[in-house]
Length: 255
Image (cartoon, rainbow, N blue to C red; front, side, top):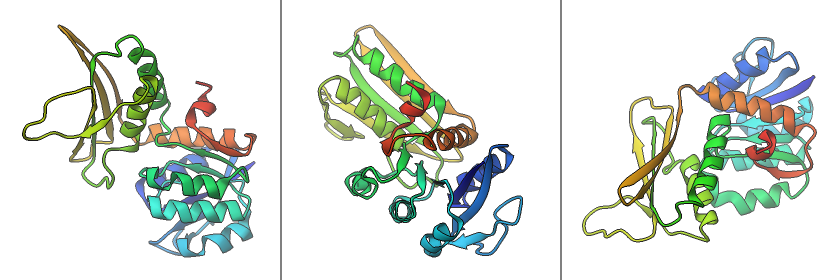
């Protein structure tokens, strides 16, 4: 039985992950954390929501096999530190972690096994693979990345869009990113980045490759957050036997 702790337990992703953990025959929820509804039932069973400020003490007491974190960047760094201190494996899907990459690498530093990814959707990870393959054949075409999310998403561009840009840029030996355009803005060889926020859009990502007389669009659309929750559960199973260090979802899927 894989024992699991979940941070952000009263958020939309946290509650969905708890549902998935509860439904999994090989998993057991042993701890849940949030800043809201402290002491309320975390889901099915007798696990209550603990104060996120007490994560270190609760992890020491409950000794979960893995901590799943979908929170915000500042909180995720604190949660990662607590998990490593208590020898708890990690699955982290929090976005906006780019400024903290070096800090997180220093915290983990081969001490525990961790899957840290900007997107846990199986389809998105295949999307990134298709981009890496396609750009090799159309390296001289203009490239634009457009992403759309719900009105409450805090970071922009999304971590998924930024990773798409990194995949393409790495394949081409380095590309400048230009975020939005206005006024006099002649196009060069950059990758254009555009973020849309509105309504309850779960997540749309489109990469436009535009050549002379034709274009190709590679697109992924998330229809529900289950796409991310299902991938996180898959990663939680995989990380149990994984080597220590930070891994991406590509390792989980064997891409």
